[in-house]
Length: 217
Image (cartoon, rainbow, N blue to C red; front, side):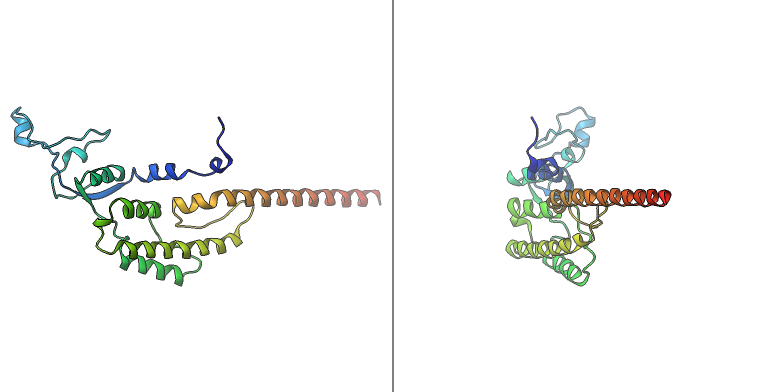
């Protein structure tokens, strides 16, 4: 079965979220999964309150309540849903840092701030699934994220003026921003490539005709 046109050149929102949720994020667990060393060496039954089963359990089954650790975002969201952890918001996801990024975007019309590649999706997931883990009001953070996104979208449109049939350079765009641009950019570049090829073929044809006329003369 072939994919629909809208998915042939882009990721679906679900695919992007799946990719992002495999990135690590810091949490403060409210459960202990680390096995007691003395009990383990003595062959006694481990003094562990709970144990989690995953493909990579180094951090997962080495947690101590209220000691920070890093786990995959999907697991952090699951533990949060079960009230077994608090999620530590990324350093850039504060009012102060976002305001600084917005000022940078406004002051540099030809450059994008160095945001994480997954910033939009991470922000959306944490706003929805862990709103009580932020020090700043979520509605204010959401507004700053929206402002930042709109400023960057305007700059992207301006950057498309430099698009040619083979090259477009827009550094520091996130996966979601690139995914939104991909269908239109591919279409435009294909058209420019066709025009370039046609002009090149026409130029070669005119050169051959001129050479033929000179030879006849």
